[in-house]
Length: 180
Image (cartoon, rainbow, N blue to C red; front, side):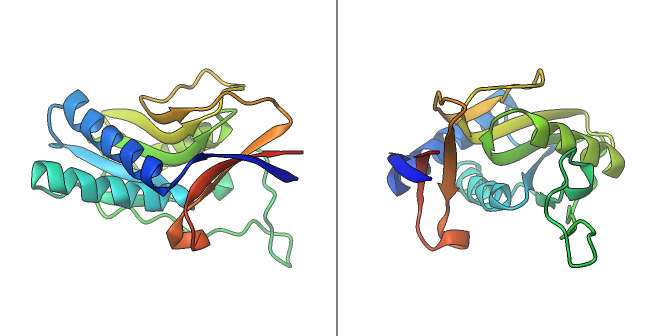
């Protein structure tokens, strides 16, 4: 796989997250009753960054949770030496029942990750609504799922791959397109 292009640099990622934070506040008429839930792994860091921006804008904190969807995926691929799925656990510090949950992920592709996240959320509680925020929407949906908040739409071919790299995980920051 070879890198074809960098489509978002660190500054563009920062701008996209700031815009998404404003859109979340506007759509929900503030942050009352809202909770951000990041999908492991990079969605967690994006949710934390959104919470920081929302705090700067609104002057109030929004709860942030972490969701592990491993057991809800229909393509369990990461396994331990015992051939069991590698589960890292969910950590949601706030009851989501009757809350507006904003799921946060890095890339929206087929929609299967979001479907798994919705299943995981329902096992935790019953939110009043679920919204979806993604840094990148690359198209190619297999399920009827769309994001409420999108940092950047990047049309891709099925032979291309979007790779999001964040400082917290990868020690550098950009979004790239790779070609098979």
